[in-house]
Length: 510
Image (cartoon, rainbow, N blue to C red):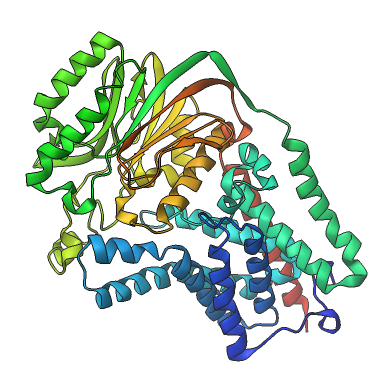
């Protein structure tokens, strides 16, 4: 019997059968409440503890069912904004949109089912504090890499405003997830095993006490001599008008008008695809802006679709470029499935309006692209969805002066999506200890400092300009050098070691 076992005589009553399945589903729903905009992070700890309790004494098959139900509740509540994108902006009938949303969330939930199945099948529950958190982290990594990835609602994001955030510059969001899950499991053991409560609480003291100690450390320091004045333009163009040819001139004029008063600023930022036409066709607008920027020493950075000639056909990109006092163009590397490219396009294109959205045939940008240059500083650029990929941001951003992301979150409507997206953007700034600019079409446009704090925003669904200042930082965070690889390596090692130990014990049993 190890410290991490839960003896039957001291357990809180573990429900079985259908009741336990229902609790697993509800526990997953609770998990989603720990993220923005509600940001009640303690509920995620309760949610995980309930999930662990529901896995006690279960067969691998039953654990898989409960894991799937937990994931269904988590994603069903947490990414319900997918329905908004499919129905309201993808013009898919509501009943079909509900079915598609269920298929999407249910498919993601399968990963939680597999996670729970492995936890029981490999006998990892005997060493739960270490193994449950480690297995969870490995599956978060799978969500980054599987197919095109969907790294949304990782547990660590819920702690962006909690004491554990002090660990982010060291271990990143996956490390925060590990620490939070281990905390939840330790607290559960302390409740379930009163005779070992003092020993069980020691990890909590180490984790949360360590967070208190680390909170006073500044890994990067701002340089007051190297600052830039910035203006972030929010055009608030409704998604229904975004690609309407009849609205093209009005959209461009909106951004030009909002920019007229900003030529004394160092940097002006327009959002993702601010130009509703291709870069190659927009030179009548770009050329005068470029000249004005050079004359006033202002860098204008904007998202725009672009194309180039390939070997056999044209290749289309979702891009960011700089004119005026700067240079460079970046093509998006992480594309959104069904939004920017259609998997199995030859088969499903044309089957429903959602699969025929404008600009859904983009190509992926090259792996090694240089950062953008503006006012003599380097900006690591990220377009919409790709800012939620921790390793991509670390790779491009670790040597940059500033981080920059543009997005069009009009797809999310008035849902939790924009708040969750901003929460992840803040984590990237905290991990690397650098200022981040976030320019969006309908919000949430924001300036974020090197500590992951939002220092200025502009209200959603309003046309306007957000003015502020960003400061270059000196130094680097431990995370910027190693990324999440030490956390992943350590988690994999723990799983292998304890799985082998259990296998050997089972082999020697009569």
